[in-house]
Amino acid sequence: MPVHYYLRENQLTEEPNDYMAIAISSNQYDLEDVIKQMIKQGSTVTRPDILSVIDDFNSAVETLLQQGATIVTPIVSFRPSIRGVFDGVDDAYDPSRHQIMVNLNPGKRLRSYLNGNITTQKERRGEKTPNWTAILMQIAVSRTAF
Image 1 (spheres, rainbow, N blue to C red):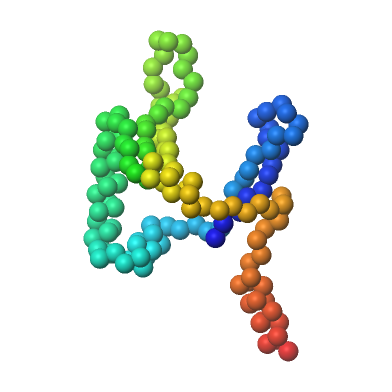
Image 2 (cartoon, rainbow, N blue to C red; image 1 turned 180 degrees about the vertical axis):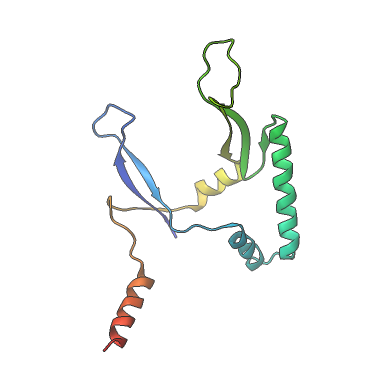
């Protein structure tokens, strides 16, 4: 399934014909969906084992970020950062004006995969891919209403 997108005028440039792509998400999956996909793909590891490893991974990432480390994995890189404006070179971190954040970037494996395996499909602004399931359900309901 391709990544659907539409073009929107780019407000970041002064060029009148500059546009930027806005990707349209086709679905949203949570951790449970990812685990189901892993098992469907033939994983020999059980669901409880997968959950345990993911929990351990998450805890390790949190600990390393707390230590100020950058974590580089094949799928994503994590780097701590600080958001906010500092009032001069002598100003210090103040939780009322600053916030600890994490910058995420795709890892080498994910970048490589995306560049070779993802297709795109352009749509007109405002157009959406038809929800055929909903359309067919509505037709079925209207036929049974008589």
